[in-house]
Image (cartoon, rainbow, N blue to C red):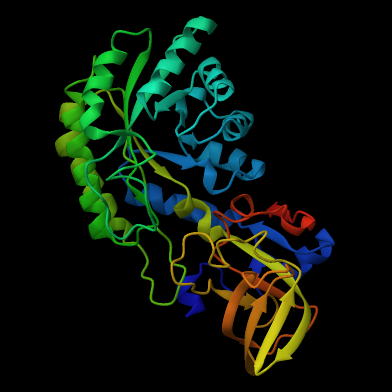
Length: 405
């Protein structure tokens, strides 16, 4: 089942990253835990996307998934742009060499300082409310710079099967679709460069059928809203939501089916109506999620009333998602393995971290070759929403290293 779930393949029973055994990498770093990201797997995923999706569709990376500087520098040359959600992410994208005109800044609660930085840089500010639109207008006047803006739309439909629903119903994200024409009309009276629309409905969806339907409805909505635009729509962000498998029974997304649907939508609907628009797909987890692994060392093993516990030097302070405390309703195990052994007699164990909380659970009742103190446990699918989505300050343990190889 692990081989079905993960992209990493052991060589001679040993797991590698970038062609290097994880144990060798741990020895070189001199400490555990650490995150390691595989450049070959990352490039392979980008190649799959390029092969299956329409050539004219721009691929933008959602920095929130993993903002490691080396990773961003690599993606800056491999993808078409970045989507950021904070001033820190904006600074990281610019530091990586991204073209400001290929950066979109979305997210509720942008501060005045963040908006000033975005206006100065010339990125596309994706407005989340009429109040934010007024603030951007004022800041542009103060700076003597004409802000570039788009409207983030809260659609009037929900997407089934998403790990997190970020559209439909009441939302802190975006402007309700029925209110967008009025806002766009108001924007036309201000000294703003209106670009277009951003619609993001949900994340972590494994169903091509559901994603295709959502994309069709997104295009329908965007074309309807474009009628209220003060000029030609230059930018249309269709969102993303592509999921990756984490658990037994998860089926991989049929990327070819999604690509065929997008090709049809662009050729038959979008291009005739919006010939000048850059059409963007925003992906984060799907790009980097499966190229990363979290390595943590077994410090202790103990028996407690019939259960064998492996106590490791990592935990939820680095991998909150794997502990089940980042969006899971019913906790399930991420795929795990030993770094240096895949065969031999197995044992049922529970892997726990070093924190003083019962929530610090990385894998419950999993089969591993009988693990010994000192060995490395690997948690896969760790390339997205790992380190920066975790409470690293909890209990004041050292920060883990990150390597991109």
